[in-house]
Image 1 (cartoon, rainbow, N blue to C red):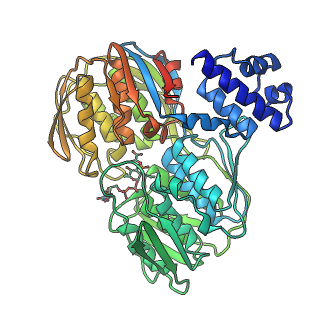
Image 2 (cartoon, rainbow, N blue to C red):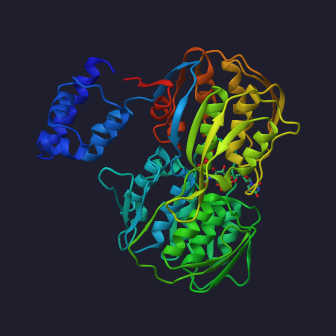
Length: 509
Ligand SMILES: CC(=O)N[C@H]1[C@@H](OP(=O)(O)OP(=O)(O)OC[C@H]2O[C@@H](n3ccc(=O)[nH]c3=O)[C@H](O)[C@@H]2O)O[C@H](CO)[C@@H](O)[C@@H]1O
Ligand SMILES: C=C(OP(=O)(O)O)C(=O)O
């Protein structure tokens, strides 16, 4: 950070503190630092990490953090270094978004412990705030307290924030219980090509929800006299569609059977949370869920979502591409077993600790230590499947790992229209990636990575894949517009730096 920038930030922090009627000592206490450190910050004499800036923003409840919106965020990466040490996997984006939506089912206060502090969550908090839901991060933690109002102010929905996530579609399930007619903006999110909402709409029809799509909004009408008459059979085994139906079933005072349900990690987390709300669910972790709902849910509850298997895979890929030995702690092993089996076939070596249990009391975790060594391309193509298959979101990491392995790796992303295309971005850093058709790429390895300046592709996992390749590329690379990465990863650059990477976060100001 330049001196002028630090001085400007310091001045803003001082003004915000005074505005709140706080002394430097008061602020120091909230930041767990000293009064003299606060004085240095305010005078622009102290380098500030993004983490510290975020903490100060929280403590002062202040708009000055909107400085962060002054320009897109970029990363400067000095690559070619090995990583070492240990890193904890954080809780998942996908459980976080489901749980935030599910908190709308509860009239009481919901506390979500150790929630991922990522941009996707921030957008949903903006949407919830615009509806009148009170949310606050508890001091010195990533615990979020959520208190809904008696009635949501649906007319005031923050449309801009809602359009930046796909999650808004998951408001349908919770809202249909209490609102006869409402509008939600079209779901957005990563640009992965068209993603259908039809399975959501047809499944929720069983609860009397009719949705028409008009001028950028879903217009929903709910007839609460309509209840599921038979098992709801999902046309695809999707994660968010299963969650939407679970949330509809949670407050239907009868029994709902959901078939072809996704048993994936985020769905399991949602089920465990619903159980805490008093909803009984049989078949958790299978493709048939039987839900015994409750008409009214009014309970103060807390829940700790589980660790993110996709982040675990990302860190594993970071170790492979930099040929490093690191320990990845808190890996939700059940949700990454097929990935590990595939890596076994490629000759990867690693050690696993004994299993222990996540804070949700259910999910099995291990610590995984990577062992460096050569890899060979897999014999067969790598393709994803709904759980328990190789996770759809983990597929892009196999393009990176394939680029390190000796031979040709075929990646078949049958799921998303656009995602395989973004994997060709790896060619900018020296990858030999050939697009066979919109769904298939062939990656030739091993790769001599080279530093480059790249703008993030508009998709989370392919963007992370480019970042990780840059870690391996000797020299200085620049990755521009990393919002898409921050959508799903908390402080990724800082955390990789703790493993020995050299990544600087900077902005255009
Ligand atoms: C917030 C969240 O939890 N997001 C995850 C969720 O999104 P989400 O549940 O929204 O995924 P979608 O419903 O968009 O499904 C992804 C794509 O897979 C296709 N499809 C899916 C299942 C199936 O049995 N057949 C089929 O064809 C869909 O048509 C779609 O094109 O699941 C995706 C697929 O695991 C993940 O990439 C997302 O990270
Ligand atoms: C595609 C993804 O997520 P989302 O459903 O949030 O777009 C992802 O996590 O890679």
